Length: 256
Ligand code: IPE
Ligand code: IPE
Ligand code: MG
Image 1 (cartoon, rainbow, N blue to C red):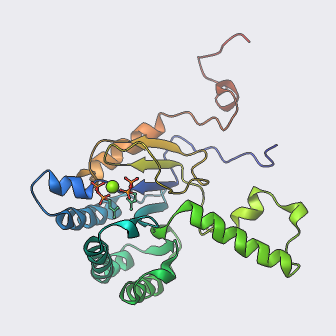
Image 2 (cartoon, rainbow, N blue to C red; image 1 turned 90 degrees about the vertical axis):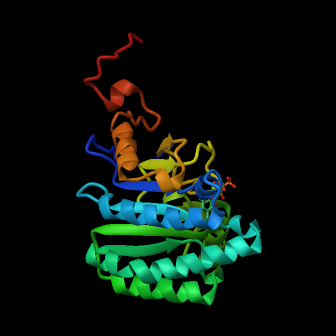
């Protein structure tokens, strides 16, 4: 049985949006450009989204920038992505500060190159005092790794006597996930037409509204983002209940 009724999101929009920013490579290839150009345009687009996404309602934005499986790509592409990451952090930290957006990461960042870790640390420090808007980048992130890491940390606490296995439930385990300080995503977007989650926030998206669009990430600008928010506002989130339970004024009442 579920112990706690989840918070129902109101029609004003999502509190937390997560995005799989996919399709950079194909965006470039279809234009006869190198994939690297697609990644650059992807970063530009993220910058545009960050300038307009946050509002009094939307306070958490989490993006998948590099998965734990993306190491399997050709070394030249991985190296380019790491350089782009470091230079983009350097370039855009002042914008985060100006907009009072706090930067976080999820994933095994300790395995990233030192140049990236240095820029991440600087950007996190520069934004550490902000409390309203939270921008999280998933880097070297994969849900399966995250679960394994969480179970290891939990087990260590059991061994030190700080946790009792008989009390284990989802609330407890989720305190060991990388996302422990984040609410679950309300809206989960994937660009580029792929209909899969590719190891992103698998547990956290259990009741997220999914939005798949064929648009490649570099073209998924603020207007497309606003369309996704509007689509979300027309969804009915039921969390296992009936439509009538979550919306007693619904005209769709079946005689049961
Ligand atoms: C997403 O775009 C960016 C990363 C995975 C780093 P892709 O590089 O996956 O672009 P496609 O899917 O090959 O078009
Ligand atoms: C997911 O996209 C990872 C990121 C967008 C960072 P991929 O392009 O790596 O996913 P698959 O391989 O198509 O599933
Ligand atoms: Mg892809």
